[in-house]
Length: 105
Image (cartoon, rainbow, N blue to C red):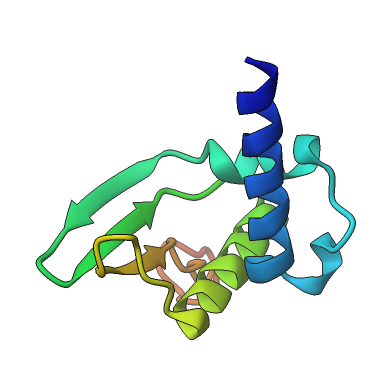
């Protein structure tokens, strides 16, 4: 079990070094764990695998998650079977749309 934990920690640190924004350069496993546990849906296609992540309830973490998705998209990693890995996350909603806003007099 210890060898498996070490391998998973090394994989997380490799992902941090390659796909996380620079602010996470010295992040520990505890800080990264929430990114690896975020819920989502996996859609398989003939040439790609899309991981549609649901996001967080925290604006800052969602911003960082979008940064991770952008870096993965830029790198265009391939899975061992040759399919391209694509990560998606929800975009922030604008609160300035005017819908549901009340005017204050």
